[in-house]
Picture 1: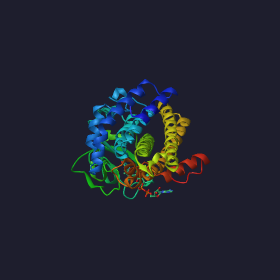
Picture 2 (picture 1 turned 90 degrees about the horizontal axis):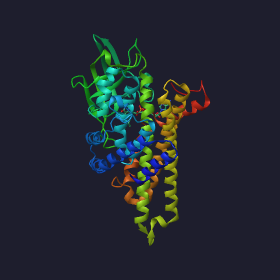
Picture 3 (picture 1 turned 135 degrees about the vertical axis):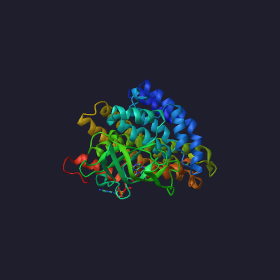
Picture 4 (picture 1 turned 60 degrees about the horizontal axis):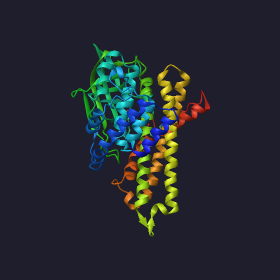
Length: 406
Ligand SMILES: Cc1cc2nc3c(=O)[nH]c(=O)nc-3n(C[C@H](O)[C@H](O)[C@H](O)COP(=O)(O)OP(=O)(O)OC[C@H]3O[C@@H](n4cnc5c(N)ncnc54)[C@H](O)[C@@H]3O)c2cc1C
């Protein structure tokens, strides 16, 4: 197993935080990551969306339903398994993490918790088997941080719903077989509806290629133009759309935070190798004290992020086991939010440190620090910008009545 990741798995086991099943999942993810690493780098260098290969390899190792219950063809992993998996994938880059987070966390968490048996059979099982990809469609061109004002609408029509409007920055949108769309209706409120891809009524208006990084991830502007969804595709009940989105985001934020831990690990590995290999002033740069200081700083950033993610995974697993417990929900929510903010910030700083340590060669996407530096930046924006999440943290601390937003 990759060394730092292996040590982490060992330590969690030693502490009694994880068991044999987690270790088996970690080994599978490690093997998938080994196979995917060269493919992912090549795609990145060619600025190619790599979702098909990502899915092929994840499917080969049976990882696409990592937290889907076994009865629905998944591995039945808990939040700690998700955190470990995304940590290892994060070493390969946040492009991979972003795409997989939508499948394994955002959409699967919603269907596993809120889907009807029929929806689970039609969407969750094929998702877990890697036969169906789904996108999470919340953000719109005019409405991001404040989803309560979203405008995509649905009308009730004979046998179901007709959905119209644009969804922006949608990951995997060009490839998804179906979409969980959050849409509004005057009488019914914001609701979550599964829409199947239908070339006539669902179009990719734009593939957003002008991103500074995350090249291997697909980001799209989608247009729903009277797309039909049968009535049985309503997920949960009318008016509960934002609660369902929250279920997905709670899982997704943990995945993103863990991915950032992996990105820091990769930066640390790269920085250590470079410190041993590169010589300046007649010695390895790792023998210069300020370079050592920088390495220590990256390790501090790694440990801070890792410990927060471990703790968040612990509380989220407890909450998932008792989803009606309000106290556990608060602990999970607060700790996942903290982990997302801390790990994404730490990853930005660690990649910056690693890039500096690499010198001029670091200012390039040929080396891992340069790629991570660009890619982890997005993690402070998506799945709840860190600014908005910090407001959430503060209002948790201050108590009821202090919510600064929504
Ligand atoms: C690569 C990528 C992939 C994405 N994938 C998806 C996806 O699959 N599905 C999906 O639905 N969305 C996706 N998003 C969208 C993402 O979740 C949004 O970009 C994010 O929620 C922020 O919304 P916004 O971009 O509209 O920013 P805005 O809401 O316009 O915010 C602009 C700025 O104002 C700040 N701000 C806003 N309100 C407040 C406030 N009350 N107090 C303080 N500051 C505030 C924000 O922090 C931000 O800095 C993706 C985004 C990116 C970059």
